[in-house]
Length: 425
Ligand code: AMP
Ligand code: MG
Image 1 (spheres, rainbow, N blue to C red):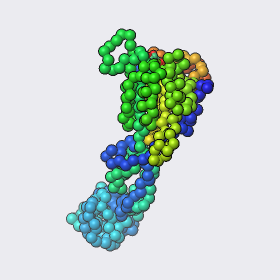
Image 2: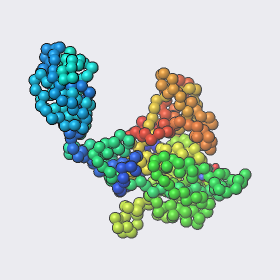
Image 3: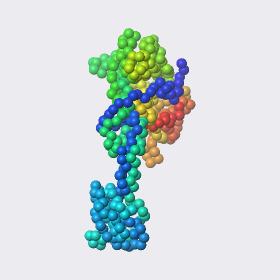
Image 4: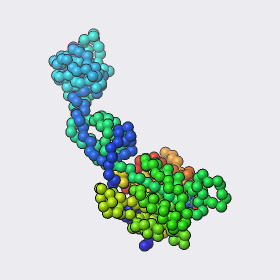
């Protein structure tokens, strides 16, 4: 197999995935999830024409000649129903959100009136029919779809759900994710410090990346570079919807991950992508054993990502491939990190051939974002990832950029994603 382009690898991944089934959640636990059903309005909102202002409900025809004096026939507060019909020469004092009484067709702001006595006002400006009236059904009409399936639940969406009295709803299930580190040289977080070992950071960095998507992963621990031990761990990992394995996917003699997952029945789709850092990356699918589950074989599909062992590479591969996959399984349509345009603070050298992701910090001035490298870009230097606000994407044909060049940066913070990668490979 040769090196795939990033977009090709993403396409292969997406073709192998389906959105998971749905489950019911309470409104208060729904933030960040994706609606699996359409949501309809259960009434007109507002239920009738209401006032958009504190003022007077008037007949606009009465104001053809101003100034004009009108009789105030009643006081309508929000929550009150009008008791009287406004006749020519009359008006009603009205508060924001209160129903506009019959006969009236517009609302005059308090500021544009003068009180003559408790039940007489003088109006000094004219207004048109419908002025400062929020018409019935302006927000929503009874029966209309107000939120469609596939909508990500944001605080604003929660407000709409509350408006239509949805306290519980169907959302797409979150994938169950397992994380496994591999390598004889690795030291577990609670092991005593051994100068000859490498601390396992991947388990935790990946854990946090998964958590940032609203999923709590299972940490399986560290498997030694031993085929039998790896097989035991990988078998366990394949019980999950998604297994993330870091390390051991290369072509070294002790890189047993790929042969072992293949032995367990996983169909490998690719294992090389033309990017830096982030190579090698393996992806495979285990199709559910037929008839094993009530709902059919597809229910038991598992996907495996063999991520590079280098700490930065595994994190970058997570951003470019795993996060979009997990988001897709959860029903999201915006799968990719938001990109912004920035100016480069300094020159950047590059050897063409692979798309490069450069860890950058972003500042801004009045012309926009400015990107500067976070330091050594070696895939083993995790500190430069820890300091990064974003990943600057250098197209594979680039030979370098001068200071001030316009670049594309994927933002690493926040929960906002976009529907296309918007990068040039
Ligand atoms: P590998 O892909 O197994 O050849 O590993 C590449 C590099 O990443 C080696 O220097 C490993 O020590 C390092 N590495 C592998 N797994 C981890 C891990 N879980 N945490 C930190 N570094 C790792
Ligand atoms: Mg290794």
